Length: 342
Image 1 (cartoon, rainbow, N blue to C red):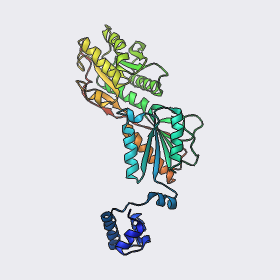
Image 2: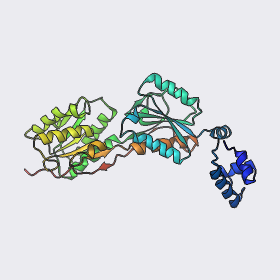
Image 3: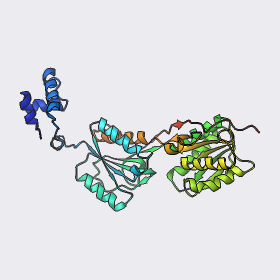
Image 4: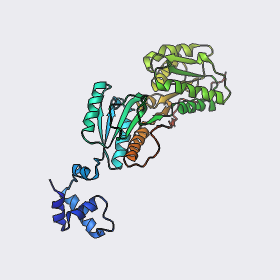
């Protein structure tokens, strides 16, 4: 392996000059021509800096440990890890990711393994918005919870989607198209943190436009899956006073609405408008017409988590740790139109 001394000898300068240039600390100390020669020679010789040695000097390894709770196995949630990796890389950091597969004992073992490698910060990524129990981590190490918030008494930054704001935007989008009978197909109360928040956002939008609530238009399901949603959704659409629009807790539920509507001879969006939540491309893009939906900001949350971790490492944030919400963009496709004429 080419060493810093080998590179210095090849250029004909001191090792300290090479170090200054490769660490971007040479301005005013090494002239531009020499700096350019050093960089060209480093590339030609295939010189790779010794990060361990650099870490011993700076007391940093430029490594962020990421403990992932089955996130990589969920296609659309995997964007969070992409966000972490790209932001960390662009900032000169390496994200070391371990999938704990939702096992408590593996979480503890994985955190110890990362700590033994002298990481500079920890990101704990949850599969969905929820409270997260943290492993034992030294209080001096920055911790960020991605798509969640730390359990009671734990000190950590967190980043989550603005669930309530997104539900408000989705419902308002339907109202702006002229709908007043808007159903909300959701999951049973207490199933997820997002359950109450999205229901509140739905109600906020109705209240903002003076539309009276109708409890019969709220359909609660045992889980946000297509199979569980089909029968209850079909019963909703078979009613003589059926809604003209449906806002769904998930794209999978929206898929069930499409299925039931097709089976009942209802056309989307001519007879029924539908808005989903998640922006699962294998559903939203595959449906005909395409599904208008709220996109969870997974990539943005991942990038935010990496930036916050790096800012904490460098002491660029003075505020105490807290939870930040990021907006969910509305992705318009073809499933929303005006209510049918009666």
